Image (cartoon, rainbow, N blue to C red; front, side, top):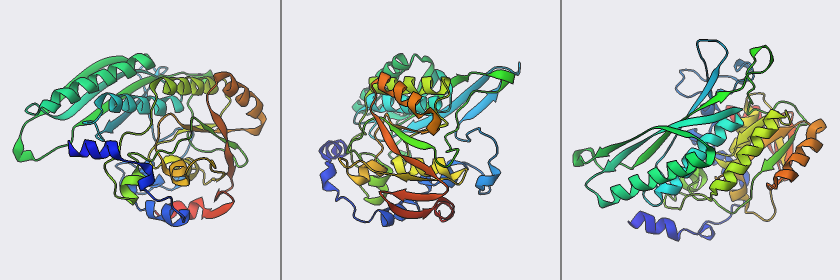
Length: 349
């Protein structure tokens, strides 16, 4: 397949490192998939204001209270079509890992999943390769995260009149939520809580912009490999986050996802109109650091009074981490350069 060959040949050095980050940010902001407003407002008729989002529950995950009034479950849905044809097993492992990481950051324990694989052409010899690879990836990820696979279906297509359709894998993940004193759910909000809290980056840094919105939307490069990913490392990171939440060492947790680190931070600050002051990693390209979408990375907010305990836990886990910066009253600063304030930046989307 020509697309697959091009993806394998992609090299980040083909993309010039940007000189004007401010211009780049405002160009990416017109992409509705990266907007904080879209993030909190899926399928709504009106645009919400931060002040209208009450309570600590993240609107990015669903809590369902069962009939007995005490048990709670959480659900999340993720889909992928990028390069499912090139490496279906890795694509499936990434998809399950991404869904589990989001749920763990919310404070839920993933327990079961179902999967639906769409648009597999049974008249194409490559169809069986995609189906078997996706099945292997789902099973490998389910085993790594100790998930029960409750349902798995494939929809076959062979209707030329419908035109070419990209194979798409959809994962639905369900988890349980612990209940604390007075039946209050023990959940974790991705939003920053207080000015002065430290922001820590958990995971590896890498020069990887593959399959990112930055690469596809800004540079119009759609053929690139899947992002860097290590299933066992992903499990280690998620286990560490579970322990932090259990021991109340963090005040927020956000998986680095669509748009990369910058838009993850923007979404974390939008609800409470808080900004961030961060320093980028000198050994990594600034575009991959801010906008790359490599897997296995999480941003957490830590109260300064709990920093020593948090650092001790991280050292014991042997997972790479570093202090990224701190939460501000609203200003956004990167490497000592101001990019304005979160209310104006979000409002311009």
